[in-house]
Image (cartoon, rainbow, N blue to C red; front, side, top):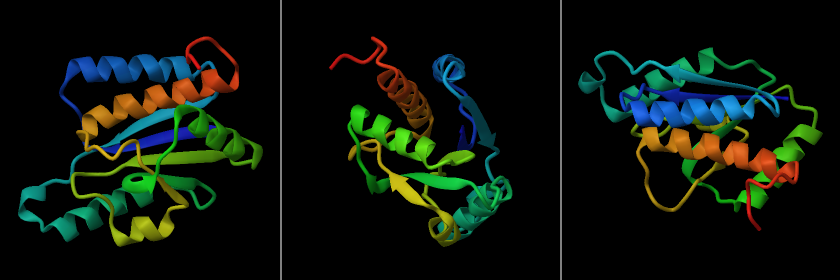
Length: 157
């Protein structure tokens, strides 16, 4: 199985970029992983919230294959413990999926089209984090999940 993480907009914070890259590199020991940044929508300040979500949604849809399993990182999604998330990943791998795609949306969330296309939603916390921080948190949790599945010492129970 391959895992893809899509995120709207770049981050200028070098520390966050470094951490995300470090965990992305670690993940490659377990499976094929790619992290793709979808550029910010041009002239988004001139767009309504709905139009911005629609434009971002179109950019997300362009990057998906019909067989992709799409999971949204959304504040209203299911919350997991780290062990629970590792079990979620194991079930996805056991199901024979070719590509599991996670998406971090823009500042206003996702368009209706993206919600309709999605196969599920996950929330990292009831707290709100910047979209740049979520990248680091999520990639670290993916890494942690695979170390749990392999009974490696990274995660302490």
